Every structure is written in structure tokens, then in C-alpha cells.
Length: 452
Ligand SMILES: [Zn+2]
Image 1 (spheres, rainbow, N blue to C red):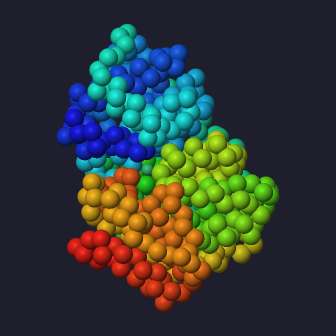
Image 2: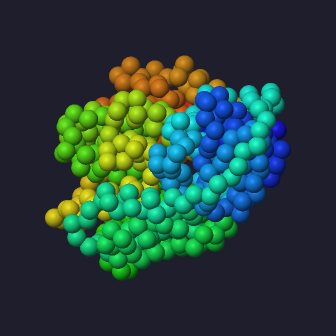
């Protein structure tokens, strides 16, 4: 068994090669044990539309039911609908079979036990159970349950648009295809819908809105038809992409600034959680608007946990996961977040609102391939060698060095064998200076690192 499939925030690997029948049945058995330990006997199982998902569903549920735990099958759903189900159905445990935004041969599991998304310790527990192979025995059953109508009603009851909007959405042939268009139409929008047929081959573009090339079709649709907004989803619809009326892509940290403004208007002094990759404009903006910014390590399950611990009203990360804990139960949901953005745009006197959000000089996320083993050592060595007396150091996840003129970030990725970097500054020149400071140290550690 390839143990690397047990990741920091979920279980993920190549279907068939890593996620073999044997391994997946055992993961199901481990989940069953954990649920029995909690004196519970049910788990909700959903899946995305990847080609390997039906097979993985059969292996996983075979494992779960062999422990005596029952499965509530909610069919093909976006990941947020699985989270929603753990709040609304009888069981507060759930697992969704999804490869999210990863290449099409990948698949994986996002797991919720007792309404909490599993992170490192929880995932490790599953690994240990799979290695020990001592599972309870029983005969669980599989039930089907319908959840999509319930989910649609909840969103359409919560969101009220002040005006009818003309929008485009891009489902990337992923799980959002089955429900996003219907929900936005019910809210009163005219929806131009791109790539909304489920297709695990993703024939049009890859379902990852954090990459600019995947936003091209949506941007063109918004500009060609002179629409009010464009909304994109990743493969399992827990990450959001936004295109403005003028065709600009709004990064998740700046989307959060717009959401923060709306929330803090009604809830002065509330907390907002975001990851170390986010712009300084976000933390400064939250403070100016009367909120409390809380910076956090990257990882959707870590952001969610902190959000609930701190009773923050909004959480999010640069990758596009946005969590509303305000009128919504605090999980990352791009369909709901998209609807909240529609609400903001519909209420604005000036429809250019999103184009008028502040901008800074920043790089996108930069990834340098180094290997899974090397990445931690390089970051550790960087911390040892760096000597930034004038700067504020945030070392909760890699190292973020905040100078007066901007900041630089270096962290080991938790999901792939790369170093992650990002830079932001008040001007292009200052950005270059900060980048150079990082370059100098990194190349002194390893002169063969790729260009950045
Ligand atoms: Zn996703």
C-alpha cells in the first residue's frame, strides 16, 4: 500500500493503482470502526462524476457495511452537498468520493465525522486502523436518500436578489453541473451555463478555477454577452472562481474582502479566518471594516476547524475554499458562496463594485517541484539562514516574512511535492526586491532549484 495517499486534509491517490479494491475496502472498514467507536451506526456517502467513482463507491461501502454500519447513499453530489447532508439528515458522519480539482486519473475521500472534516490526526487514525486490520463484523445496509431538493430550498430561501442578474457559470463538467444552474435560475438570474454535462473526462478544460487558463471560456462568455458576473467551480464545487463584469478574475482573498465588507456591516467586531497565502489587503481591510483578522495555516480542514473554534463568521483560503458561518453552517461551499456574491452584486448601486476592489502587486502562487522528502528540509534550512531583522515573521505554516513594503511566503505544500511561494508588495520594484531576498537564500541552499 502507498501510504502517501493519507494526506494532511484527505485521502487521495491514483484510482486503481493507489486506490485498489483491497485498500479501499479496508478504508471503508476503518471508517466503520470509527463510527462504531462513537456509538453511532450510520454514514452518508456521496460521490463525484469521475469515471472511477462508481467502483470506489462499491468497494468503500462494501467495507463500511461489513462492520455493521449502514450507508445512506445520496448519489452524485458536489462535496458541499455531502457536508450539508451531515447537518440535515439523521447522520452527522459522511464521506464523499472525489478527486476535486486533481487530474482525471486521481480520486480520493473527504471525510466528516460528527460534522467535523477530518484532518491530520483523523486521517492518521484511519491509516493505523488499515494497518492493524482488526475490524468489527456485522451486516450493514445501504439506503438511498434524496438531498438535492432540500439543499436547493435552503439556498433559495436564504438568498434574496434585489435585481435580476445576467450571469454565466462554468461547471467544468464537474459535480456542480447537476444543480448550480437550477439554483441560480430559481434565484431569478438569467444563466448562460458552460460545460454543465457531467463528464469524468473533463473534455473542455480542467475543473480548477485557480488556474487562469481554466477561466478563459467563462471570461469570454461574460465579455461577449456583457453579463453582470461569471462564476466557476472546481470539480467538486467546494472552490469558487469569480469573473467581474469587465472580465477580471478576482482571487479568493479579494473575494473574501467583498464578503467581509457585507458581513462586517451587520456584525461589527466579528472574526474572519484566512490562510497564510492571502493578500495583506484582506487583513488590513478586515481591520478597517471593524473586524478581527485571524491568519491560519493553509488547508481546508484546518481553516474549517479554526472557523468553528473561534466562532468566526467567514473563513477562506487563496485556493478558493470559502466558508460561511453566517446564515450557513460553516463549511466550504462554492455554490452557496457564488449565491452570496450574486446578492452583493444585486444590491450594489454601482455594478462595477467588484472591479473597484483594491488591487496590489502580487504574484500568483508559485510552485517549485523539489520532491516530497526535500520540501520540509529546504524550508527548515531557509528559516535557519534567514536574517530579516526589520521584518515581522509569521511561522505558523512555513514562513511568511512581512516587510514594510510587502511580504514573501515560503511553505512546503501539504498536497504535492513542491515548495509554495507567493509575494506581494506596494510596487513592482518593491516586489522584485523581496523576491530577490528569498531567491538569494533559496539558491544558497540548493543552486539547482527551478527558476522563479
Ligand atoms: Zn474541490
